[in-house]
View 1 (cartoon, one colour):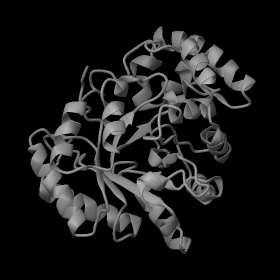
View 2: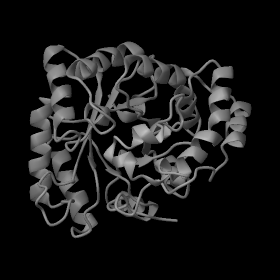
View 3: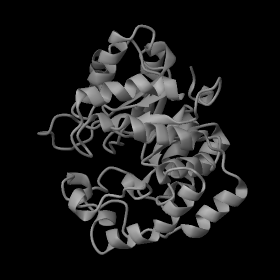
Amino acid sequence: MKLSDLGQNGMLRMGFGAMSFSDFYGPVEDAQIRAILDNLLDLGIAHIDTADVYGNGRSEREIGAFFKATPGARDQFFLATKGGISLDRSADTPFDNTPAYLARALDASLTRLGVDAVDLYYIHRRDRSVPLADVVGTLDGFRQAGKIKSFGFSEVSPTTLRAIHAQSPMAAVQSEYSLQTRLPELGVTQFCADTDTTLVAFSPVGRSLLTDDPHPRSRAETMPFLKNNPRFMEPNLSANIAVTASFRALAADLGLTAAGLAVAWTLAKGAHVLPIPGTRSVDRLRDLAQGAARRLTHAEVDKIEDLLPMGWVSGDRYSDAQWHGPERYS
């Protein structure tokens, strides 16, 4: 299966973000993970997107255990993982794109997943100490060796994407993209549409702000990432919850959950966009799938964007510390 094939033969043009298989947004039990994996194909979701750092390998191990216990399942999924963020917490830098490190990281990911190759391998964060051309050359080597079928990059700028494409076309770029984070529209979405590259949109439901149950401050304080994220700190959080109330009401009027409508909006932005929401709940997974199956009219998209126009959200998407790694552009 190719990334461009997703959405064909009855499958949804939506993937699953398996960071949910770590404790990033709260504790998750093995049984919850298995229930999600058991339901993906039944709901028409054929893309799993994970990374070696999610739960220090736990996400990959859980997916690998599912494949081992479910004969034939691996062949039905488009499987993506990432490397390039060092798992060595004592390292001088959190990022490592050197050929030797990436080779070790990829082999370790393949072992945890229990597979000979992945369909897509991303550079999770760019390491500027390694020339970009060398990183692309390393990925091409992995592809020629049969360990990966395609490659991509995560959180990089349009200028970086053009430089990569000039050397070797990539399959995908992963960026945060949603009604509340529209930065990719400053060049990334256009690049993807023009080059047949898939924009894999993570956090399409705004880390809960675009759902029927946005995290209150008391809940955000229990999550290390959200605790210090500007959009989940006051007074920004209260403002964001208030302004999205009309979006939740519209979703209900359309017979969807707010999360489902957020996914539907993302898909309406073009055939080159593939949202990858995550969840620890099968019921919420079904809501997301219902949204992915809904094709919004132009009038519905206009109504959504009237309620939540570009720039509506209060607070930057990352704190200064959280901005370490993603490439900024304007």
